Length: 166
Image (cartoon, rainbow, N blue to C red; front, side, top):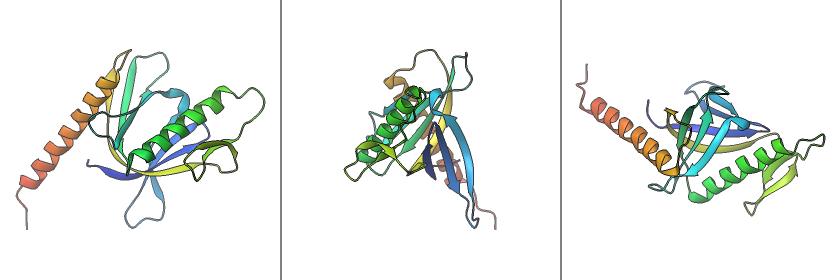
């Protein structure tokens, strides 16, 4: 697979990633995670428009998945991070009262109590890789992103070099 245009959507306590199928009216769900399973969100050092997050595959295991994306700008990554953080705080603070869905206002600040049901971000999905480790550092996330990028470049080069059948 190559880099894909996707919609990253934060809906209450869930992150949903979908893509529009060519010629289709409905979107294809690529994956969905509960925010409680997101263990780390990081902006990558080697590319300021690249970010990743880690998710636990199953409770009680050390197996994680690293999901890598690119955004249009560094400010979009900051917005996405703020939404993840605010949504996670809403999950933690659910003690009988609902604080509402966090929302990003015109100054790119997350506010509490918006009426919207979800937040959508158009980003590019680079790929994901499984990691079996209890501790994953930012350098590890950078290395995973580089590994994914290298695999994609190699795959694209192989496809470009392949003979075309007429």
